[in-house]
Length: 483
Image 1 (cartoon, rainbow, N blue to C red):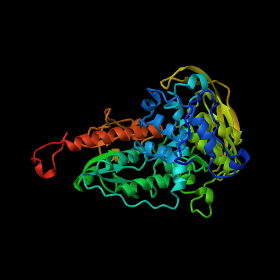
Image 2: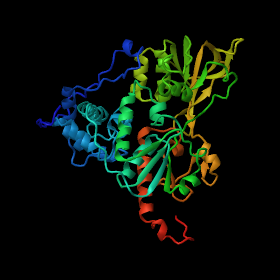
Image 3: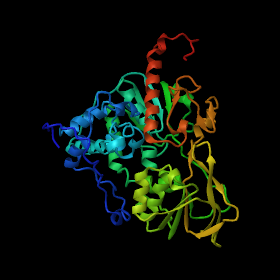
Image 4: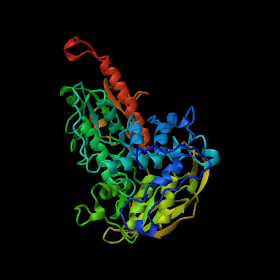
């Protein structure tokens, strides 16, 4: 598509276009991206399904308030770069969000034609716009933007909450530094999401946009160990945002979970996604995957782990204690896993693991479940059926049953109010410490990329408001306490 305007003819009755994907037999043996993206013709049809509503609910439903109506109009008129320009008013991550945002829960759910004709495929259109703009600029090196000169703000963690906060703050002339504990940037986007869902070059290039805007990134830096919050303030940072995510996995709490071949999803996915174990021995970090792998859980991490196991040649089974309807994973990820040969066992949970003389896991004992009254999650609670135990041979086990925030920073900063390891904040992301803010999974527990970004945006707005109202250091009275 180019900038030559095409006629715009709304046609909501046109069938929703289906995103092309690699054939299952190909992708089950490859780390290549599964979704291929729309063609230009498919984009024109899909974009013209949009009614261009006078009061588009999709914009308010988007946690970042991207002008969905306007960017789709640009695509319908053949202007992919113009569409990216519209998206970039609110987000520098169209390639990332076009792939991993759960649009079906937000903008697409609010689409006016959704109930009658199916929603406009907003996520796939966003992805197309990003990819077209990226291809057009493959050989272009953007010039350095003017470097910010304002007050210093530190962001802890380089996941989605911090990245969007950095984008908002640097545009307001703040000098922004992002401190990342790992050796690569992106947080959960890098260690938690597989290459076959989010190619690393897309993530790296969109983070590089922030660097070009003047955001500084420091890796291998653990706030709470390398430096404390107090030391960051002593270094001249006037506000700190904590976006350290939820990297502490939940364990089974059953006999045998320390056997060799038993992983948490965090370790399993980090080894493969971040350390590139799928390239071993070219990459130095291995991962052990046996002939049969059982992944316990029903969220996106479980789907990611099960699909990776399949790509390692393992018979891959997902064991979930509830039914299919109660799974938290995206429907398309469940469908892709099934197409690739992943097998699902519902209404069952592990109660023990057994190993051989060398300490390798060899068998899982499970118990069957039935669904009872709804629990605190709003879903029917799984209830064990006495006497229904059974065993399954297994060589690799992955626990994908949830995660909590890593407590490193919280433990050395007792003045931060926490609840079950999560940092407590108000609606603007303000913590119990002056000029310290938090958002994303460190506040919510395991959540979604786009909600983490919404938290980062709210905190950036609060930081800007607080620092604009704060006098310059030389103008402050020594006894002044900043709120």
